[in-house]
Length: 82
Image (cartoon, rainbow, N blue to C red):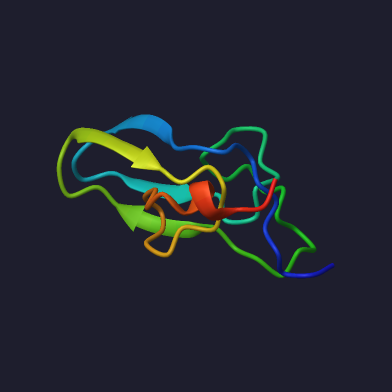
């Protein structure tokens, strides 16, 4: 399987994170618990991105899986081919 992620959705997921907690953002795009990992990456050669919430806040996590600043959305989904 190639290492090209599946576009889970064209646009960010609005997520409330809690300070001090670790999260695992899905990089492959196949998780059924988007934007978080559920283990669906097995066999893809991709692994989730672990990040630690520094503050309790709302984040906009990348849904297209092509962000240049993961796990957050950077607008890359606007440049993806249809």
